[in-house]
Amino acid sequence: MGSNVAVIGTGYVGLTTGACLAHLGHRVVCADVVVDKVEALSRGEVPILEAGLDELVHEGIHSGLLSFVLGAAPAVADAEFVYLCVPTPQGEDGSADLSYIQAAASEIGPHLQPDTVVINKSTVPVGSTRVVEQALGRSDVAVVSNPEFLREGSAVHDFLHPDRVVIGADDQSAAIRVAGLYLGLPAPLQVTDPASAETIKYASNAFLATKISFVNAIAAVCEAVGADVNDVVLGMGYDKRIGDAFLRPGPGWGGSCFPKDSRALVRIAEDAGYDFDLLKGVITVNDDQFERVADKVQRMVGGDLSGTTVAVWGLTFKARTDDLRDSPSLQVIRRLLARGATVQAFDPAVDPVEGSHDSRLAGIELAADAYGAAQGAAALVVLTEWDDFRWVDLDKVAEAMTHPRVVDARNLLDRAALHRRGFEYEGIGRS
Ligand code: NAD
Ligand code: UGA
Image 1 (cartoon, rainbow, N blue to C red):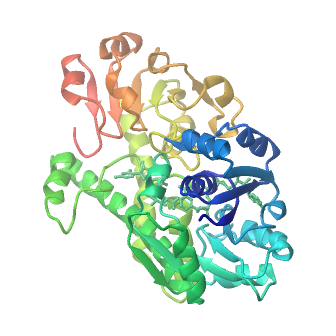
Image 2 (cartoon, helix red, strand yellow; image 1 turned 180 degrees about the vertical axis):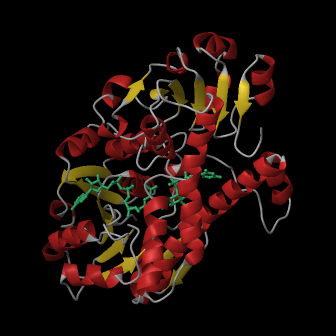
């Protein structure tokens, strides 16, 4: 028998959570404050690119287990469980901004049934369980921390096949009830206290970011000493204690979470009296990486980017998502534009017409395909690892460009094939 669940916020996490819980047999009402979004979702139109999500939303609507409403309060009247999946953006001082969480909790507080469990899935600093309790203003409902570890692009798969489910609760019976929602998922379940659960989330993201900054730093060393970072990672990865996951060099890490969560953890530590120098270094290496990629392009065109046309392949923060939030690609492009280049970009997930109204893409000329972006360009830089780019006709690309030159910031393309066609090539951590 499924439970009655409300999900507040229908973004990447909320919509995935709602659709997957309906798939597991729960009756789910999802709420959002954006009218267009709620109307589109009610018609089965999913506004984000996320593999398998359309199918699950359709399935939920047709089975009657999944519905959408405007506003948080109307969603919670019959709920036994309420998930908070609202944004926790970076505040001005680097800390996580809890205003969305507080607003949602204060809104639903008066409408909850006694014994409801409020489950916080947003990424929040230690102590936020208390903040939610206070904002709810209810002593007869439990608040539980249940951090989410899904990745965009594989959100549905990650939700249904998690590496672990973490529940942080002071109230053990509430933790057991929440665990019941995930029955059948093939994952270890860890029940702990709220502070530990909240810390697990930040520590995990910070560690993953550290791995990437580490490999990007090793890539810089490889360039200096003439080694090939791909071979170095392969050799490191055979060591089971290291593994090869999350050691792909690139233009730096980005997205809606690593940048804000790493800075938030530095701030959490600082507030608690610990100077998290290691994590500050990880962030600095990442900021430097954007600069290093822009420098590579500048060097390749002869040292001066002003008046030069640069082709960019990839705008999203990684492949298989349409998310542009904090994209490393945009960080690099910003630097190219600041140095006087004209940037012509193509991304398989960005429609040139819609994109022209997106302020984050201001100043970028959006092309309809990879060849259009290359037209008249003095260099091409690959910034997102879309598979599509592997299969382009390189002869056609070379013909379109004024000079066949590639900076492959994802080590994605076939270097030998490019060399055969006379391209000048530079990757990350390999020449
Ligand atoms: P998002 O911006 O994609 O979605 C948040 C949604 O909440 C928006 O649709 C917004 O309109 C809605 N919303 C805001 N206030 C509301 C309110 N009062 N009532 C109803 N709806 C409201 O955010 P996201 O990427 O899904 O992230 C949500 C949280 O989950 C963040 O804390 C994030 O750090 C965390 N997280 C995100 C990911 C990820 O991959 N995106 C993974 C794990 C954890
Ligand atoms: C990340 C974590 O992987 C999730 O576990 C977590 O739930 C989520 O953040 C979150 O808290 O929001 P996501 O932001 O979707 O997921 O993307 P990742 O796949 O982790 O990639 C983040 C960035 O690192 C991207 O810019 C990606 O291109 C880059 N990356 C990743 C590399 O440069 N190299 C790698 O080996 C892996």
